[in-house]
Image 1 (cartoon, rainbow, N blue to C red):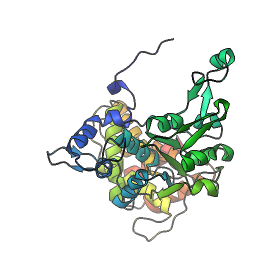
Image 2 (image 1 turned 30 degrees about the vertical axis):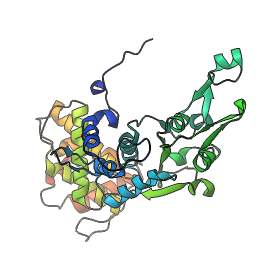
Image 3 (image 1 turned 90 degrees about the vertical axis):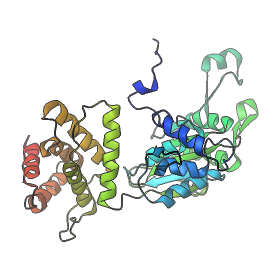
Image 4 (image 1 turned 90 degrees about the horizontal axis):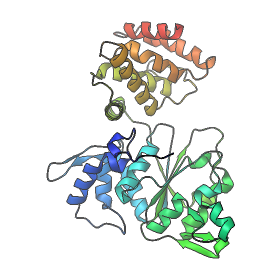
Amino acid sequence: MTFPASPSDAALRPHAEDAFAAELAALGGADDRPRPPQWKLSPWAVATYLLGGTLPDGTVISPKYVGPRRIVEVAVTTLVTDRALLLLGVPGTAKTWVSEHLAAAICGDSTLLVQGTSGTPEEAIRYGWNYAQLLAHGPSREALVAGPVMRAMAEGRIARVEELTRIPADVQDSLITILSEKTLPVPELADEIQAVRGFNLIATANDRDRGVNDLSSALRRRFNTVVLPLPATADAEVDIVTRRVEQLGSSLQLPKIDAAEAELRRVVTVFRELRSGLTEDGRTKLKSPSGTLSTAEAISVVTGGLALAAHFGDGVLRPADTAAGILGAVVKDPAADGVVWQEYLETVVRGREGWQDFYRACREAGAA
């Protein structure tokens, strides 16, 4: 079976360095500040790429992360040093998104990735072997298969480890020597791989996941931890959802329709109120469901609603298009979460001015 090469613009989800190649090129041309070894951009330009801005020639850099500027500055300056970066936060706080864009801006390659799971083996972090070569000729450099971290060390690039706390503890600790000594021993060859200038590592971890493996104190000391918070205000969260929905709609080639800011803001309001356990006006305390109700889930609900409106509706985002998605996001446990959702509908949504259509749509979605 052959896999024909496809242009990046045909990919369902282009890598950050491909999707934003024009912005990265514009920043590179305008960037006259000192650059660390092997970096494509200066730390200032990397921060501008993530936070957005306007260059002297008028080029507009779109924001990739909406949040406190200091968080991005600390993350970028961490990677200038020999400390690895750990992005920590609840689900949906853009940890993976920020990690990818940092790697794309710094080294032009966000693909040196280890995806952490409960079954991630040590070989995924260290290296593997071409067993045909190994059996035929024994251990050799030709038989060694470099993993993403080894390649990043040898090429002076940024490696990424997603969901670090999902990886078994003994596999996590294989990073200790890499991060402290900047060396990866290969005992089978009586050799080692030494990291060249420019190498560093970004890990992400979810601080609310169940069944995780806590980092050892020895490994945690090798990281500078940056906590990514949930959006501070409803306006900030609406801005994030709007931008990402537009990007996803373009990537998925959804028909262009009015995103209906009022409907989008309603989705964000529902998520924020149930997530915090308090209504927007601060007057009513609420029970929170078992799910996280993250910004990422709000983006998914709105994107799904736009697809429904485009293909099965009248081209306008309406309550009926988002109701089923909200129900699926809120009610993860049918017994416990169902009670929470019904209580929210009856005590908050039912009597809220201008929300009657949404109330009826949610009732119909729950009865379906």
